[in-house]
Image 1: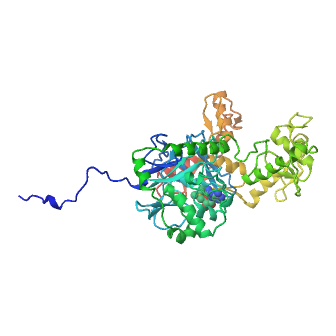
Image 2: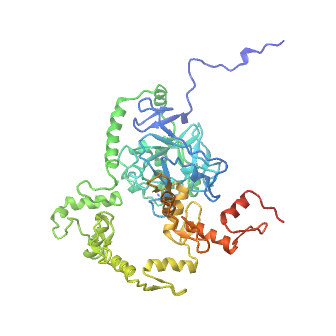
Length: 536
Ligand SMILES: C[S@@+](CC[C@H](N)C(=O)[O-])C[C@H]1O[C@@H](n2cnc3c(N)ncnc32)[C@H](O)[C@@H]1O
């Protein structure tokens, strides 16, 4: 029997615990400090996991899995408020500060070959791998979160924890607000986000990893390094394929000073830091949370589209122009551009005051133009004029191709797309195209799960209004569609159409494999799904 030689064993000190890996620290933005695993003072984050998606779903195959993983009670997908940015993620409920989402799912790669990549670092702060969410069937909903264009817009912080990437809320997010994270300066540059206008207040960068306001213009390389060091306080950097080499060359300043690290293992905090950060918190909260728009003037009801916009507007208060300008009924400055009349609510500009006055009715709800026949009221005269065609039966807009006439020009424009096959409205999730905007809007609800039409009787919800209308007939017993041949009645027009085929023998749906024909599309689908068809 042989005994192992104990002397050859490596020595372990049982008194000095091994220091945790850096990415087991998280940065508590309320304390401005690194804390081990979670902040003892501000508590753990509220974790919201992804929705579980079974291997087989009832959703059509074109719906990406990533879209289905969204925690749908809290969030939904919809077109982004950023022009041209595609889809975005919106809150369905008000989300408090300190909610954690994630981890960010995607394929683990070394190369950055899409705009959906986050760089993960190892414990030596060297790039370890990339999580690439380009494939929407092998990633989660976090791929749809867009990049904030201004510090006020940013409501999420991305951070690395235990080798994975998470997003957490850094302020209260009112419902129906788009979730936005900051991708990092390099990526922001490629998105043409003007970092000099990101305008975060002093101290914000240390907390949230974004550029500081009005940094003196320095050479781009230096700027990038500075920004990256800030980003790295969260142990994370979003990488962009076009800047790949640059990014790889960057020095890492990730690790907090050892004393801070040790202090945080014990979960202690400096009072100084706390006082400082609570002032900053208050400042940030005042600037963002108290307003339904981030760019609101504190002296009047002006809402700007950017911080710059509000600053320009404020000048007019300082110069006393707003209060002195008596000619302008709403007390607002008239700018000297070609369209000097600007709507205070949505910033649309007009070259004539009457146009602005008419436009303002949209916001005030005023409808000064009334139809003498049915008493329906309209914001604008042209809308009333068009409406009157319904009563007069006048259809002045004629399709040149099929001669069909319409009482409204937009209806003709829409109709013409049937002939041209034009489908200008594309779903960003599944790329399906539509010839009408309302059809796309309805379709998108398949992805977002939104069901805005609710039955008052049984509370069942629907994503499409006609579905609700048809559904209500279950309760009312109404069956307005009658078969002329056998007098059977139906609550739903499509059921009547299918029924009539019993009489006509028509079977328009053919199986491509076995050539069997069906009178009803759903029967054909069932036939294909159940593999009932064997080529004969
Ligand atoms: C991670 S994806 C975000 C989700 C994307 N909107 C979608 O529909 O798949 C990054 C891409 O979104 C768009 N994007 C995100 N933030 C943007 C911003 N602030 N401005 C313009 N485009 C943005 C860009 O096309 C970018 O390449």
